[in-house]
Image (cartoon, rainbow, N blue to C red; front, side, top):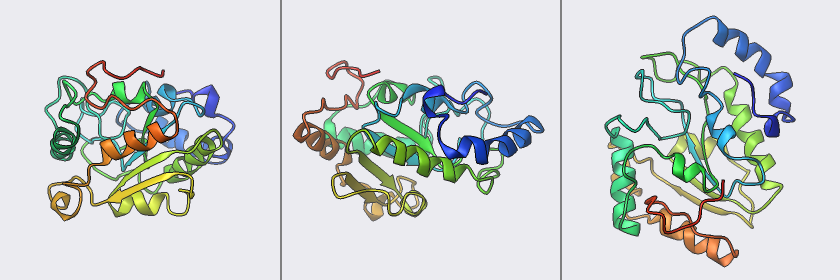
Length: 219
């Protein structure tokens, strides 16, 4: 459960992490010690190009893999991810072969949750532990290196990073892909093609959202 070296200079790791680690050492949690920092392990500060912010890991054992919205390859698509793939298909006419989104992370998509741990079976159990401060610090650090595209689905994500997107960044904020809200502005928002168009205007390679091998990996 060692924080990735490239991110350890953030104030969170001296201020908040010791207490959170003590709490984690005293309980079972998901996605487990090896994956708790996976989003930061896979994307260095100078590699981040897109930020997709989730809430907390899936609370069902075996589902969460340490990346926001992503699941282990053998896991059936959760309802929100199913809707993400529906919009992805409508937008760019392709979807990844499974719910494993690590291929996005390898292209500089920071799939970060506002809480990096959860009690098995209890969604939101660690939401007030102070993890959200890490999310803001991570984004601010990544912004030092280049403009970022923000994909913020739902009020929780929009509130968590309020005030951080700058004029030079791209901000796409819509309803959450949950079945309860997807038809209130998520469907039809075409976020994936909009991000790729924006990246290309900044001389950046587009994201291969469908993981078809058509876009170069950056990690």
